[in-house]
Amino acid sequence: MTSFEKVPAVAAVESIGFLLVEQFSLVALAAALEPLRLANQLAGRSLYRWQTLSLDGRPLRASNGMWVTPDGAATGGGQWHGLILCGSDGVQDGAWPELERYLQAQARPGLFLGALGSGSLTLARAGLLEGYQCSTSWRCRVDLQRAFPGVALSARPFVVDRDRATAAGGGAGLELMLQLIAGRHGQVLLRAIAETLAFELVRCEPLPAQLPPHLCGDALSPKLREVIGLMEANLEEPLELGQLAGFVALSRRQLERLFEKHLQCSPARYYLRLRLVRARQLLRRTRLSVIEVAAACGFLSAQTFSRCYREHFGLAPSSERPSHLAEAVLH
Image 1: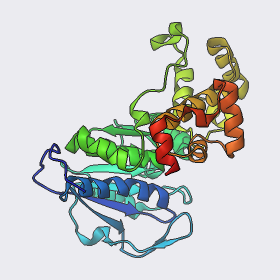
Image 2: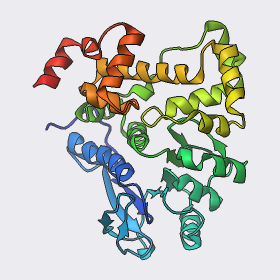
Image 3: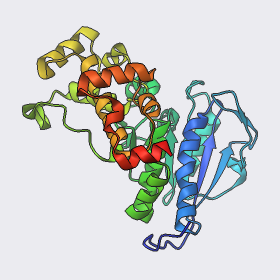
């Protein structure tokens, strides 16, 4: 693998600590680490170093039941350019006062703090997101919004705001790391990593407009705009209508009326359309198989996906594959 001459040289190797807690998401951690590994490999030199950490250095159990032994203890006095908390959806945040004190001690100029999934709630409890925008796991949105009105909760899957970097978890962590790498080393390396991962930067390009022209811009209801943002951020695991309504303090019926009034369709129909549009982008621009695209867009079976796709676009998903990508998938 040749190095990329266009990658700007940065004097210092950037070190990042990934702080794990009990029941952390192993998927989110792996998704965040892989772009860093590829950045080093494709650049032909060390751009990043990383360590997995627990507060005391002891092994922890991930949310899938796997025991993980970290590289070291966070309290061992290591120095990092960035520290990313890998949150847990299985344990109540706020149960770790020692963790919050440690994070507060790390919040200093020159170090960025990040969080994956519910780790954003822990940062907020430690007072480290006041005045910042952030993203978080949908399971934590209501608690974070109610308890911390000074934190600007975004519907986007990931947010970089000054020296804070947060992601909703899972694949959003991968996208967050790509964004951080691009900011440090440029678009050449970013696109090389994405191509190696067979990962299309779909979220870096907005979804094709699904709104009537007269509703684009400020004319759209703020609550409707927030719900649409939540839908766009949760395509792989679609949220239920009741959850969407609860996030914006509406009843199901109020939300349905809002969609009917402004968009002349039901929330479920609009959500399905977003998922199918994302699927079309993935089929046309990545090497993912039809089954993988179906799963990435929240369909439980390839059969259901193919039926919905035909009904919406009038052709089979396999027909969308450009010839050069179709050959790559077959071989």
